[in-house]
Length: 453
Image (cartoon, rainbow, N blue to C red; front, side, top):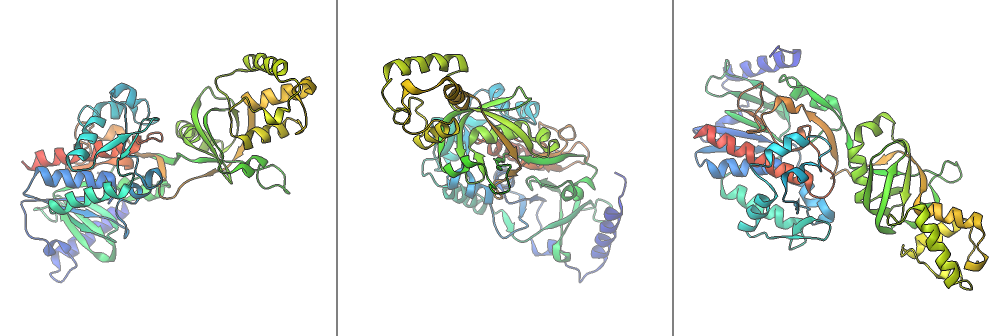
């Protein structure tokens, strides 16, 4: 690997630490062990690597570094605080189709540790999972704390050393300066650790510049862009900063179809109206599949929503004729045949110019056609996005061609491993990103254990 200025600087600092007996080398604070693994990142993937490596190799010293004062923060907030652990899909090919980036990669890794293994792993440790009708799987306690407690108990039980507020500033292959250890890890406050093995499980970064310390190791980075975000709906008028539909915030449609204009890709599922626009699984999945294209479009595009995907325009016109004959003297506003939430039904009537007192018999063709269009092809202008800070997911990361899918080890640097979202793998919403975290963490931990053995 060609030295960059920062790598050269780190190398000099490490040499100085090696020569200075009064230095801040933290290695002396840990008992001498046969081998040492440092896991960088206190999230799901990092914990799973650390736990399983320690479990499989009693003689291995495992140190987990977390740059903040919080552990497993995404686990805690996932699924509204319930933790969407995985998804009830048991066919590897079908499961891999839920990853906009990294499909072929996870198709290989899932042969080693799959959804069935995740379910078994947690159940064996007293945390059974349950399946919901949409396939998402949660602990039966409906609390993410059950998952956190399980992972912390395993880490403590196998002697994993956890260091908080330990931000990594750089990594140098230190075989020349410290022959007894392969790596030197420089932390904040001029602290340093050495290790035989490193697993990087930092999660994704929103900016390419934040990957620089990894690029300095010789790896290439797929540009990070946001994934799993919601759509903002401005009104397009200064006096109305938001689209009128946002007045229905909290209204959820269980099954709607949403499509980006100019794209063949569409998603069907639950849609939630929020105070800023649209959210829900269908929206989040669509944002994941089109993450890079929408970034290029500066998050300004047009969407079409079919609130009743069981109908197309022609079929709905026929349905209208039936209602006009059966309920001629009834008010349209009182006969919500769409089964949509009543607030949305009333809103769409208003958008179609249909007043509350209008009867089916009095509905003119212009307003009827407008209502049909609004029910099956409601168009909205999207301008901007909103992401959830704690559940932020990025498309991008370490180029997968540089990682061995069988071991998670770097193809460029021996004994350097990766796990989780730091790689260019991301799934749609529904437990798929956590499954990749468990799988990649388990494979890395197992591969490191086999190296030590």
